[in-house]
Length: 452
Image 1: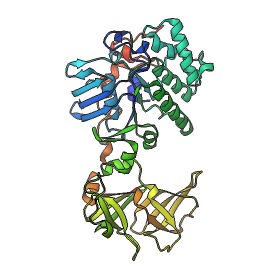
Image 2: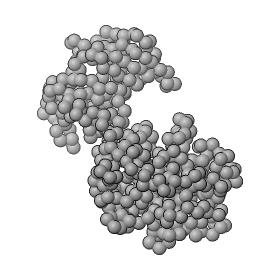
Image 3: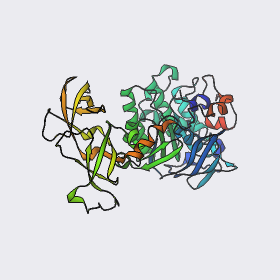
Image 4: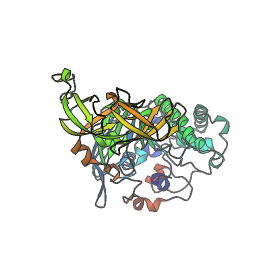
């Protein structure tokens, strides 16, 4: 259970009665789209900085995933956008409305947003349709209209036949679909997702991922989704923001994040087979004067692993790194397995392990200098302990100067975040529930009374 959900309950549809004035009438309109802009957002808990001058803009109707390890600041950023936390400094705009800056702090029910939590946060005493209707009742929709729209949304998520059941009679995936229906039943400008799939098994996660992607895009709402799972991020996102130690270290399309990571941390967090120490010998002769258009300073360099096979060819890598020592960060797709002694090999290795993955086999390999490569795929199984040859392809190799790559290390999870020990739990300790879900609107108004 997330710390956010555990202490705050549901934000199923935060555009509520309290938002009828300034937060707009999104519930009575059609599809709504709101840009989200975060400017120099800073959040401190005591002397600990959880967010450090984060700038972020999410375009109207787009799906943005905030990706980072535990402690990177992603949950804290989501809570500040939702209005659950106050910024120490900075500004938040939703659409053209300033909702947070200094003393200005619109509570969640005035921000025209909805939220889906990882622990579902359903009202246990309300039926499935009662939970979904609640989002509309808070917007003052009539009982008949609320029933009709809720039934339609439940049919969309495949729960129409279960609408009279109660949350404790549903599976985890069914409960998460109820939470999704509740968030999307009333048109809203912004939908926030707090790691909603982390409590589900792998097969159900894949199905729910598709439902979330389809339903949110059909709704037209702007979406911000946080996760630590890079495969989830790449599958869902129009844009990805990578956070580390409270800073937004890269923002761009999934392809840009994967193929052109801004730092070794981003490359490591988005999936590597391993890291190989290399010597950068200089420009490839045919490309010595060439600089690809739009990539100033990047050119093809001859790179030779320190453990390379004598007489083997260097690997040609497009990079801005200078000659000298370097660290080659290798995606699994960049490793090709060949028969021992193959003339095109760059490296020799021993197979440490192999695992059947349905589409083929993933291998763990040990190089002569003790470097390990993992997740190396091949259609054929190479037995444990057998010798193999390795050929590296440039498309999945990322070269960084040795000093830069070594200094950064794996420090991405050393920051503060809402689900870490950053003081957030103490802030919300007084609002813990005992199984009964409370809405963000009710939280903001310190109202613990359950709906009837």
